[in-house]
Image 1 (cartoon, one colour):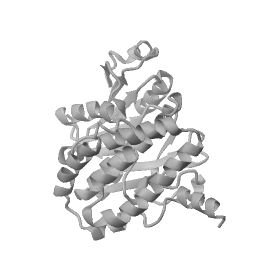
Image 2: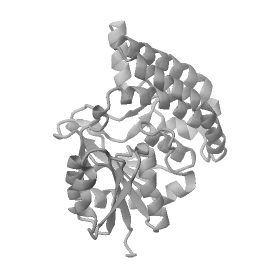
Image 3: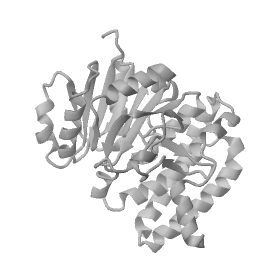
Image 4: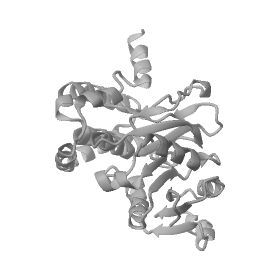
Length: 333
């Protein structure tokens, strides 16, 4: 291995070879050279295996063909395990429908070295670069995770700073983080698995950093839009799972009252939108995962290394901005 920090870039493909070709091409143009791409096909049913076989013998790419769809969390865990076993210092997770600028890896790596962050994310814009998709992820005191500054104009992007976490669709992680706190929880399958990682990292004393000059582009929901009802089902399954696993005991009462009030309103809203089936299926699956959540909770909270006072400094103190706007519309204020 080079004396430079070596990075494994993990890209997960599921029925999206067109986007994957563009994504991989952008990674291969990086100014930072000491990286290898671990491309995982996650049980695709389209022409992905045929279209992506051009990477079978590429010197910078390992193409792993997973015979089943293990979801986002299970899929990227394949790559993270490979990174740990192969001695990579960093692993970058990148959605196949995300496009990174040429200096993205170099900029995130420099930021991580400078501030000592275990997770380092950048300025994620929508596909045409007109609006912000994320400047890092936040978790609110109402128990709801959200991407910072989503749908705001690019000129409003905040300066670089420490944040609660980064989206797993475009973030650089130290492999030491996963050695310490474990991999992504595969029961999530998809949605909120990265917020779970972020909360577990914060509890264990790891820090996340947002670097404004590391720019990537992503159209949110490209993959999930191909699966009607999927996002709704996963939301109602995973939000309570995340809450019960990660929120410390002292924060449970107040955060819990707020969270379940919001969760109930979300369910009613789903019913009014004709989403009874996916919302209810997700809710019931979430109930079935409670034993897993409580088992994981014991392990996670036992390894808590930070104070609740510190957590209050990284948790957003109000409703997420989008929920505030919804509340104002409901109450005409």
